[in-house]
Length: 390
Image (cartoon, rainbow, N blue to C red; front, side):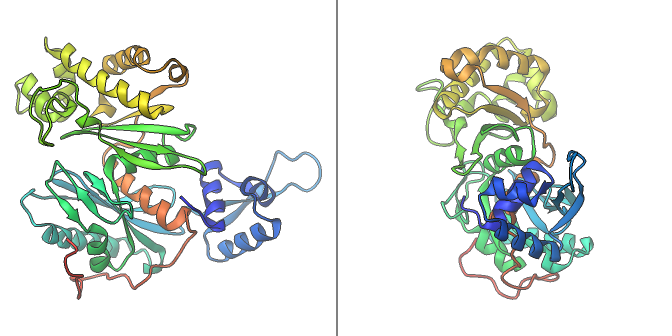
């Protein structure tokens, strides 16, 4: 993602913590005068503040550092899961507050769902008492694919949605700029920027829930992110029919529905499902399908780290240990030494952290703080809805 000069400075401060202006000049490649001018303006706006003089300097006057004021701006996070929505406010350090939850049925029209979510969001914002000009935008995490502009949920197998213009719809309802991202991809970015993957250059995030999905994120100047349809890697050619239209996909072996069928207990909580499945005689076949799909994915993408998210974040230690033991032998030799497997830092409401992260990346760390393009609507239904957006 292209960053402005202000965005470069903020990203360095996010990743490294307090830095002197001289260090920022060296790290960003900006001119000393440019760093001084930008940081002076951001300090006036309350975006950054000066810290204590560095204690590391032993001779002469120690440099003054600057750091981000985490409560200087906020974003709204909306996570659309299968049948459940989380809404939250986040400051620029990805600290969530006032999280709300809303249930919905997959038969509900998306325009009605957007209206209900927007009403919940307006109430949350009103209770927060955060000034309107401090809320930069909305991040929307969705199940399924998004278009290259990150405004449209183009296809979701789990929900049956096609070409839903969520960004347009929420902008019309809330009066804030919006960005849309695949749920697992948003979480991959969150773990890269704020979580267990801060030291990794690339990360594959696995999300087990109703389905099994993944997201890939790279950091650095050439960083990119994308959805990874690991659930639809074929592990048994000609096997069980999948809702995607294929046969023998991983999701027909390793997701909530087949695991619940394996265990034979419809009342068992999802948190206990994986542990119960591991005690079933057929578990080795399920595990082999998972390892086959994951080994193929890692070989193709070459991530430095795999992060276990969703129901995998609480997986039994025996599951994680076996994965660490058996996966390296299924990838290229040069990938084995640096490959790490970790549990996700962000848990419930994990999707809200991902949604907040993409909003922060789009409206703060890439561009520097930019005021919303139009006034935030705080109460009541929006007076105008853009036609055909949801």
